[in-house]
Length: 173
Image (tube, rainbow, N blue to C red; front, side, top):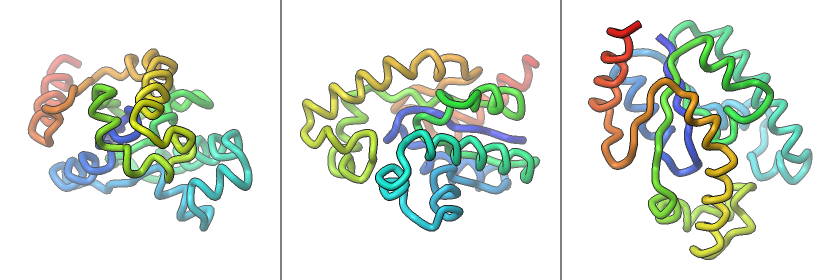
């Protein structure tokens, strides 16, 4: 089983992913953490020193390496992962993809204190600017997110809710 979690920054992909990996007794990986480990520098440092395109290339490469390496896995992707380098096709072809849908006001609440640590959100340091930035980003990414065969909308995205979604999906394929 491979389960990929996609969605906006602050959607809870990493937190839920860890819990799902424990429940399914499979390895958990966070794609951003894997990139940081490999690069030996933080994502803000990568963006500042190399730019977004370099980061997206590394993201695509690490994603493909993890898929090749781990036949069972719960993977938390970065918010933009499905939108670049045909990564969504890789996710859809090699496992089950779950979109964690969280309303923008909730994302603002969750991210306001840490926006400065996220390169694509850093310019939006107050709530209104962050809400505008997240709304624009979600609009640009929604078409990618909507291609996931599974969607769990906040606030009901618990391990049990996802397991039920996965079971129902598997029963139909």
